[in-house]
Image 1: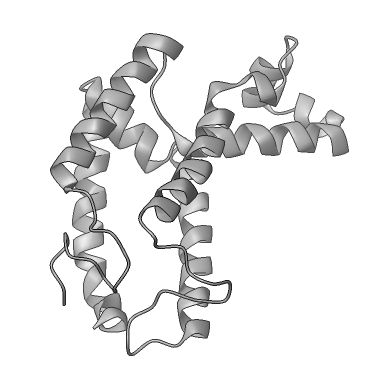
Image 2: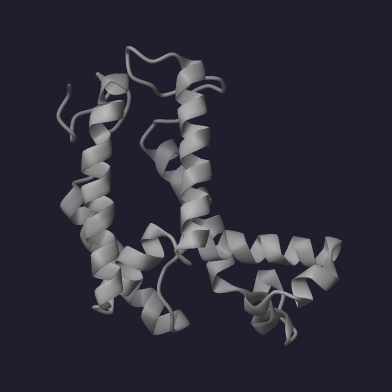
Length: 181
């Protein structure tokens, strides 16, 4: 296993220091509070885009949802929502970062451990994504909104959530660790 700051293959640039990246993320969170008046949260943007398209297909159903009424009671449009642009910015920023680090692989390349097949890795990623999406809706927020924004505001529930995520991840790692060794 290679150290975290070493290039993975020839041509790739070294990864950033996690301390520097965490500090810069804190500055982005502070700027979000100062400029937008709200914290960061990825699932909110996806949820709002989903609500907008659902309102086009089934407006009567959306009017019956209590949490959607607050959005649709005014001249709200998903393109006027900061969380939607946050989600777009994360995708674009991640791609630009991968380009700058020379980590963009040809289409069809799947990052995986040496004992895992590409098919298995994709199925695990799909199942994990579905579980995370479901859990984010169930918890009324994702890890970035709960841990970063709520933690920065010293919300007790967010700190309990964050500790539970770390404990659960540590406990579950035993089951999937062999996929990456």
